[in-house]
Image (tube, rainbow over all chains, first blue to last red; front, side, top):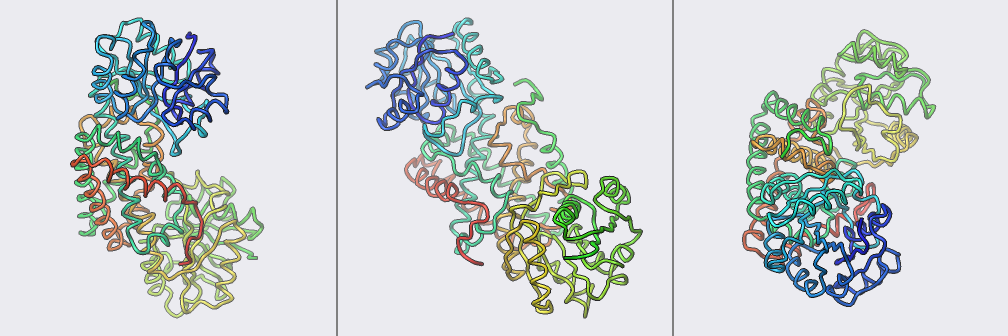
Length: 292
Length: 292
């Protein structure tokens, strides 16, 4: 499907993409660049990257597919740095968790060549960062959202879609602002909430002894609190207004439940829990209840 | 170790206990009673219970081990109902998620025979309820907390400990109020938070379409929101003051993070996330960082 992938940002997401794309026979060569030379070398040692480039522009020079997998706040500088080497026919994608800021950064960096950029967001990840955790199966069975631009050609959208389908993703398209609103609700804010909860626990004098008796419920509900700090700092700031709106809603929902507990209103409390428990029990990952 | 187990409450926790105890050779016969006759019959059909009793007192009559696995608010009435049939040498345990209220209920129900009751709490569960989900492996590798009473003999404590060890649990003893404080922090409040979050999502007009794009982070962080409504209504009411104290702390922790986002203070935000992310990354289930 492509000849050479240039991977800018040799971490968990990018490394997993390179592994998966090669395994699926979508690319035959991979050149890599990371700000951290150590990561790039490690990617080469692991066989994820064939050639180590000394700059983003060098990395992309022979590539017909470019994946930038860097914290979203670095999108503009990354694209500016690779632009001098970018071939006219190359497709450039990102994997950032926010899209409005990424689109703006891409427009600023690429100018009239913005049509080469296809904003993409695979809704998956791991609570561990770095190329050592790269996993060819990371994208298998996951959802991938494209937020195409007016400047993208239909052929390019079809090409991007086919690429992610070949990696085992289900692909859907939506507007960048729709994406950011939805992701704030079901990903960005839940991360903030997990960080807040862990922070609340650690601030308590007995927090460490509490942690010692925590079980599977705690394990699962706080797994995302171990996520990458730079990545999530960027995401939370980039999607601040939507995240803060979700946070306000959570405070209110929690106040309602607190009041029911204070009033000892077992019936209303059970009704609330029954409703959310049933809905959560029916939820299945990737089930399309309504097309966005 | 025992001859006959009487299981009062044929649901997920009790059914799993009966399966595990039999598989470990700790009991050779099981009599069962549930308020729901359907559950008891189903337990018999599944081979989890040998004999169906028509009352708690009937169920316990020949038993030297009694497990009550009912919502914590039903502890007192359950113990009162089984007392007329209870053999003098039988060991009675519960699996309730709260201990102060259970101990009080047990004292009220059992009076001078309170010494036969050993409060126990296995820190595990599933987000699905009912005997059909009973699993002989449920307790394997999990933590079990005993909150022994002054009236329990050392032999009885040793016997209870040996039983749970034989089921594959690690066992620790603590005071009931210590237990309830710790569990509020790492289990009860996280459940409330998950219910509140799901409630907040479902109240939004676009909640359903948001759910359609949710991924593995959402899946794990909200798994406990699908938990049993009656069980958790009881727990939240029984441990109300500790749960509300944790909720207050969460609001405050979230306010701190919201302010950092509003101020665009990426450095402080990243510092906060780095601290909690590192601690969560190091956390291991059952790791004793400090003896309670």
